[in-house]
Length: 197
Image (tube, rainbow, N blue to C red; front, side):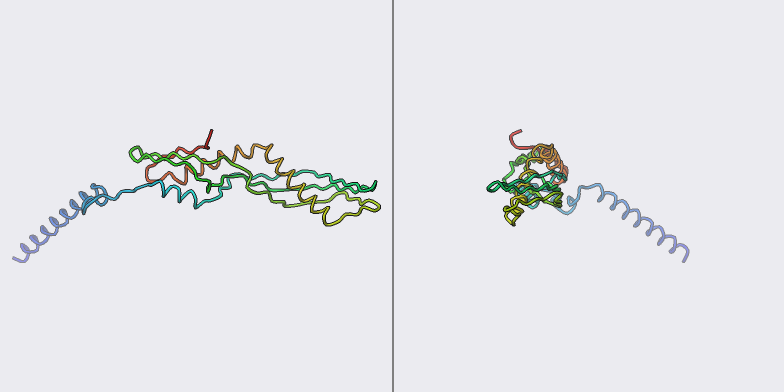
């Protein structure tokens, strides 16, 4: 008699285990959330994309280190002062994302189209300035104003060098690629490009 009860209890345990396994399998095949009600859905809105883009604000997408030579010369009543300075600077190029990018969202095809303003030089950081030759005039010595003028000239020349480089093109390419990675979520594809191109 005890052996029969034990056998019936084991059979019930096996049946209960099979029911649980079957129930677990069936539940795993359902879409998430559909068993107890509405399925979980992700909604991407224009505002959400704009907020994500603006959170980045200024997107520095390219940088370059540039070295240039500055020759400063000033003559006053026949007395000339000269300076030869080698300046090294870091140019940062990128996109100012506060300038309202154009965003279109196609929910049916899960596609985001975003057009951002073209890249520009965001900052010039002078990292090093070395004076190799400095000669003051007899009655025209170097002053603080001269050194300020050299600093301004250095910044101007570095900006000009940055505009001649492929820095802005590279910054445009990097920015669009970063936005693709930032916004491509939940099955959405991202078409990112530069406004007007």
